[in-house]
Length: 263
Image 1: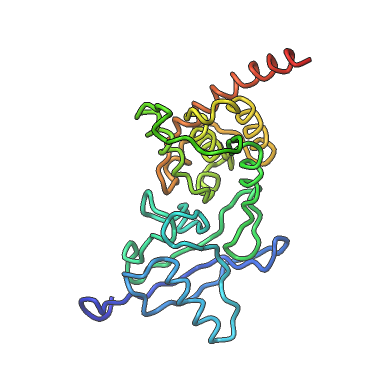
Image 2: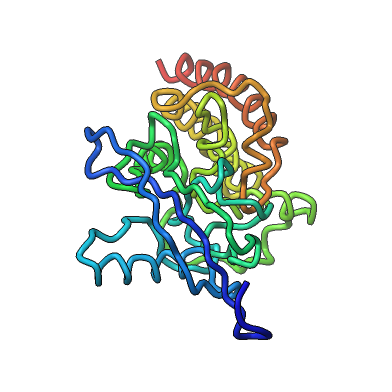
């Protein structure tokens, strides 16, 4: 560590994954990074690295980001083998360099999952998540004026649980951390925040069956490792997976009954 007080800086070695395209084999590039402020976010550090790479005529590192406030879910990389890095409940964009030490070597890789093919370097294609949401992650509402919010009585525990599930930002850390590349935590959160609320009841069973079966087309199966919950930057509980599994079993029976009644 050089300097003193607010002028302190660190020198790190970045071991970053570089891959030109989805079919390229890829490999690690080692980059020496002096002059890193402990107050930089991890993405700000990558910005500095990219500026230096550009100045030297090298190609900058491609990585996903947007809001940089831990809300949008665009960012996400494996840092020293951990999804989003060493700080629990924190997205990559909110991770600060003070969590590392002067002289550290930091390995940075993209999400590793067959359903998330690498686009370039650290950027991956997470459109499989979009397919799950498109299958039923919405509520159909008739046109007309919306009623006052307080006209629908909702018990506070139900509202709280729905909001807990709605915190999911769709970053994909749960998939990247899971040994099976399963997406049960993401899917169950997207289901629960709708299925728990009165407005979500009319389509609950059709929604559950459609989203779960779409998920199964792209991702592995859950075997209760619990890595997803630990990796989630919003600390979403695996309890939602249990709820999804119960609803899925019910949906198969209820949807068959509805089908038989319509014939």
